[in-house]
Amino acid sequence: MFGLSLHDPRVIGTIAGAVVCIGAVTTWLIVRRRPTAEEIERERRAQLVRSGRIIDGTILDITEMETPVEPDQQREISFVLYKYEIGGVAYECSQEVTALRDFVNPAELRLSFPCSVRYDIHRPENSIVIAENWSGLRTTADSVPRRPSPQRGKPQASAPVP
Image 1 (cartoon, helix red, strand yellow):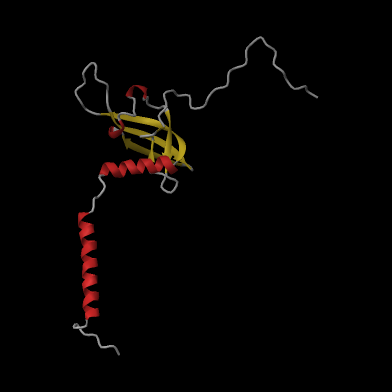
Image 2 (cartoon, helix red, strand yellow; image 1 turned 90 degrees about the vertical axis):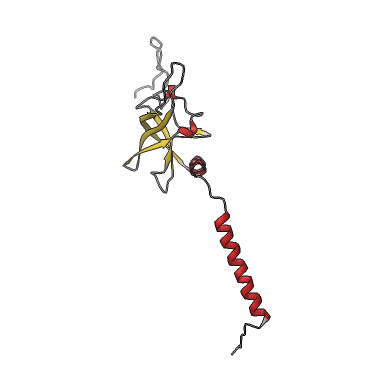
């Protein structure tokens, strides 16, 4: 059996190395920079833009910031409430858009308008309607382009009936 002694330089070196490593890890955990809530939310939106699926939804409500309204001041929106359905399950979510006020035009938002929603396929309740470089907000209620109607008076070609 090995006889280890605290007077052995290898044992002293091993203990000193372990103490230094534990001290370094502890110092790093205490001093490290933690992301702010805004940085975490920005990264969540970026992740959904990169890998989220897109589905149709509907704008349900818009919450405006309570600020003194001046005649020339544009209204500012703080929350957008929307709904969407995936696999027969209806989701109602809201997104805070105060940090995205440069990307949201309040004059174009209408209640009950369709919108595009990006969601996480593993957690469908994790969704957004607007991000820094993507917007699912629509300015018209036409979500599907319409084909031009055939002009009247011109005969249409039809297949012969056998």
